[in-house]
Image 1 (cartoon, one colour):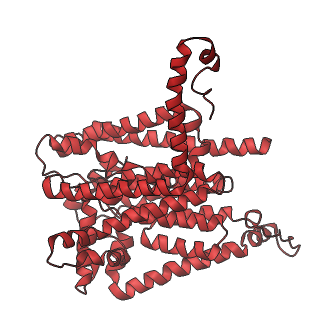
Image 2 (spheres, rainbow, N blue to C red; image 1 turned 180 degrees about the vertical axis):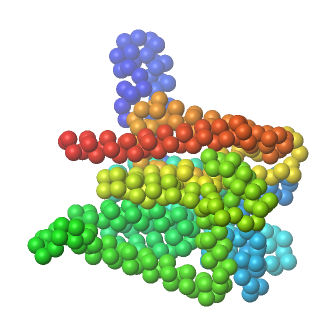
Image 3 (cartoon, rainbow, N blue to C red; image 1 turned 45 degrees about the vertical axis):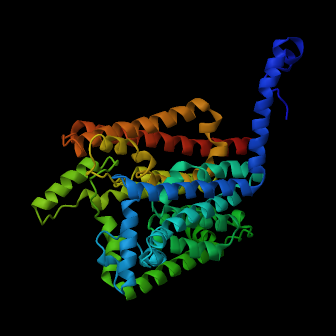
Length: 486
């Protein structure tokens, strides 16, 4: 590898000082060579990712046993409690606040087993975390496969490392969050679509929506992307017997699109019918209907936070109301943007980036972006925990689009223009820090910071995310214009 990127060749050969320059450039070359060899083969990358997660798992066991600040996510306790209920032959919805498909509780049934041996019992209890950590690795492998369709394998692994070697991703899965399973489903879905494996894509889409509702947003983008040109099917001649509108409808309803729609819908309905047969109305209420009228105003980064707080206060003081509540209609702008406008504008140009923008918009405009704060900790621990929330809790939502981020970054303004990338990072972190400071005032010090502090902080964070979303959408538009001009 040439040393020219690191120093001037002329200086190396014309002055005594050049010896020092040459010697200093050698370690840089060696470092670059070492880095290149690390990504040359998949083994070192995936071994490092597995070791990273093992270290976090072992550290989590130690922290849970020795610290008042528990490493394990509260959601993991909900999952494992539901698994124990299922192991007794009861419904997982007997466990209060379990809002997930029963399949998740089934997957964690090993955590409900006890042997009487503390070490083995701890291992069984942590088996769910191992499953989620392994899902991270599978999602990273699928991510690499999709990237490798457009670039060299070593380069693809470098971008996949953004997910695989990300300590935030590793922390979240080893704390017991199930988002890694969603990462597998989303990346498997995208991989199947890009490979034109429509039946498999339909099965994955139907299962993904059953498992956690939000992947339904990808259906419009995928359907819009699957035109005859992308699928390699000949264009059908328009019939003079049909009106222009009917001709367009017939042209749109390709065999591949119908196959995807039927397969995904059949999978989704079959799974839901099965679960309803087993667990009845509580399955529908807790898994789906709860999210329509959900009011979570605590630890909520959303700009709807203050309104939800006022709504919850009104709900507790009055049991009846004939007005249409904000929590029931807040999803309308969210769905309009993520399910209609972004797919129409981006899907045919760049499907992976469109899915990233959809997910980013869905999270940004969501009425609930909650975190979980332990309030039984002595001062000064609560403020330190609050400052760590971006890396631990709100990031559960962030992982929904983090797994798609490496697919967009190779052509992004954030890498092409370092100032834009650094500005986005600083603003994103600073906006969260401002919100967390206000949240700390409210939830730990008991000071009413709803107005104007918390509300303005929520708006600030929302606007920063909107700007980042605009950059993502703008990048795809620029790439499309550049491709058309070339």
